[in-house]
Structure formats: C-alpha cells, structure tokens
Length: 85
Image 1: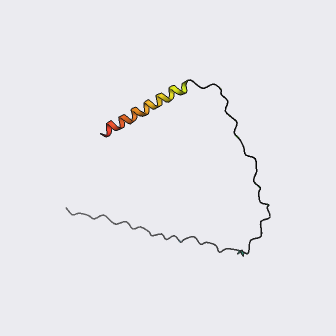
Image 2: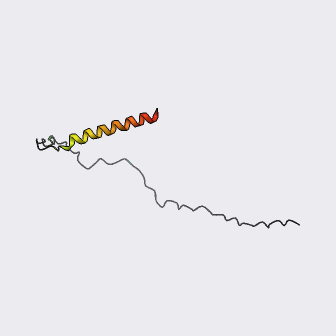
C-alpha cells in the first residue's frame, strides 16, 4: 500500500499597520508661575477634645468572651506546635 501524504494548507499572512498618532495641535509655553492669589490658611488655636467616657454599664459578656478567645488561641497554638513537631 502506498502512503499518501496529506496536502499542506496555505495560510495567508496579514500585516496590520500600527495606528498613526496625530501630531499635537498646539503647544503651550511654560513661563514663571504667578504668585498664589489664595491667602494662606491660618491654624486654629482651639483643640478638639473628645468627650469624657461616662461610667455607664459594662457588658458582662466581655470578660467571658475574652477568656474564651484566649483559650481558643492557646489551643490553636498548641495544635500548630503539635502538628509541626
């Protein structure tokens, strides 16, 4: 049996020209800057003071949640060290 070679396909080469940038229409001469017409801002002498916190009620869960978060963090650290070693 004779082997028949497949015909090669010809591909067309397409050339794309780069876009032409238009030349600038006008030029601007840069001279010495004019002095600022705006007055310089003055600093305020008064300081803004935050209001004093009142001795209101505290949430009783804050201490409990802080302890629970510390226990979880220590347990996580212990597990990481155990897995590492």
